[in-house]
Length: 298
Image 1: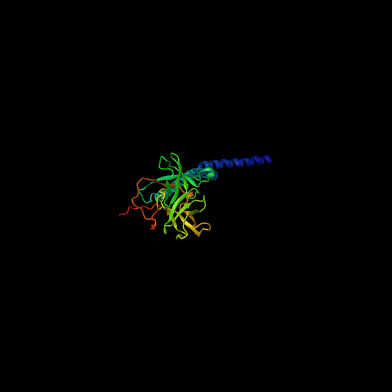
Image 2: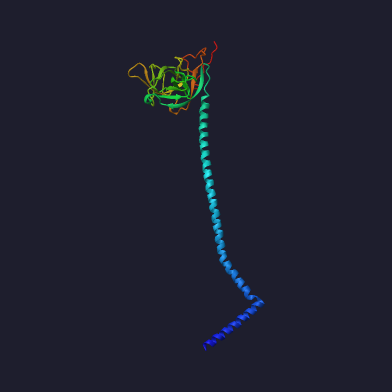
């Protein structure tokens, strides 16, 4: 009985299959349904894969863009460093140009020939006890012993010893420095003496009745012909009667900050004699580091 049902069911199914097959051959409905269903399933599978592929491609492109941006950033950083270095160099050149412009602004004096020099080092001598600097001029290039040095601010010192192309300059602050000076206003005479690095200068042999006050400018007297007359050298810091002598006790400070020097001017004697000079007892108005002495008509 069961076998017969199976045969009957199989026959029915066969008839249905043949009927559907015949119907599909005429209408192609099942083929189109299968095709549409397959396409839909294919689209459903391929769309996420395509989206993933696009995402991976975009991620890969961004990765290369990031690598390129990093390389470009490194190039820009290197370029920025190069430009900053150039800017520092140009800034230093500009500062040097400004200093040199001030130096060449010195008044002309036919008795002395100005020569530019660079400072190479400072504080020379045994155990660096000398208040001195080393410059790049020696006796073959105008840097002879006792040649005075100035800047646009005033007197620096004099050459102590020289080799062929370098020289050692004794600064005003060294205890071995002695410069004859007068006050710019009252023309009181004195000897400007160094007391050592980072110590005030001392003005000796100034009479008690001299009219000197704090802030007065001391200029070179030019009596020994080693320094041109009229170069500002120091500023008076304090004035008091001496407890031990008949002179005033005067302290002063140099006008030139020697520790910051980079360029200086040497004043080389030309051998030309000045025809006439300004009397020592007549005050002269300060017009520059080196006051030119004009020839006066008789």
